[in-house]
Image (spheres, rainbow, N blue to C red):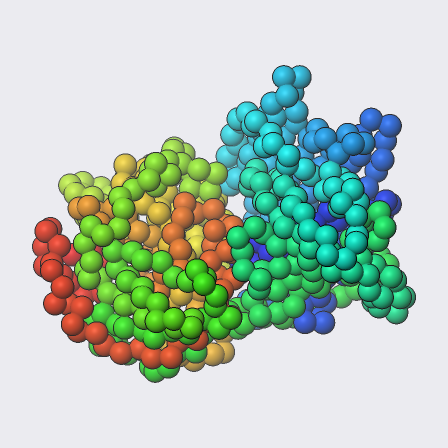
Length: 498
């Protein structure tokens, strides 16, 4: 549970944080210093180059973690994109994305994740801009209170476009960290379709350069404010984001309860229409009671064939799930041995991986499958990403599930639900869960989302955790009376599969 870089990446990629010269910003969580942002903007006759380096430090169960993101955009003086560079370090290896425009207008893009590189061509999305283009767009739209417009900001890390709605709130006097007072334009930015609780407030000067920003992050207030280099590089303070993401359990989830279906009553605070943070799967049914209250039934074997089958992305390799890598393929074949069915293969993969990752790396931010093969370190996300890659390497459709799971003790807390990730594989026409980090899937696994193993999907799902309160958790034996799947009898949640 340490994937909070997504919000930080949004702050780097969404607002135009470029400066007219070498500038620094301090990074605070609820007033406590946790990092720095260094911005270097160089204006040349034929191009503008903007460097942004974000260093962010946090602790996880008293284990310090340092995350770094470097972004560089090269644009024409009018804001036309010419090249981009994005480096993220969430583990022991650097993940790198670079792109440069060719003579034919296409971008040649290279992505390196876990030591494996791929090159492809990108058609630049219509209207998408980088840092300088975003700054120019804000200036062109003006700073009159009540003005609204939309930006199309290119995310260099993912090579995707974020549609950002901007609202000008008016001019305000802002007190900076060194006690200087500046009159700045207050703008509110939000990803199109996201709830109001995801908005980012920024304060910019007349040239569109950001001087201060505020954003929510797991119940904290993430602030960046312009200050001197000495101020920005002052010693950081410890703050444990894992504790903020924990959800108190309404009761002890004893073993007898965990191996049977459970019905949860859950309140999502601040929930609005369509803001359901949970997902339906072949092992989970979600029902809204209104006013942000949900009934969530969890239990293995409770459904069958209600959920759609695999998508193309559930079988394909990607930058994080390198299922075509020779190292991953060899490891999967070694683990599966002579297993004759996909169910047997998945059971063997799960059992093998539970022992193979033999060092719990609390300081690992988010590692790819290929990196984990080499290091054998990590926690739930490294387990889930590698298990998914190994399954796909054997031709078994698989995906990564993001959610929460019960822990009797974690980080000094007791009886809590904590962020978690596991794998679902398509077995006998239904999605079946396998958890190599905990060695078994049970009914305390509450799913928030599914995806292909990219870290930003995990970040997006867990951002709702501070709004979730579990009110009740009761045995739901009636779920076991539902029709059994065609491949056999319904089995308890504690098993890997039927």
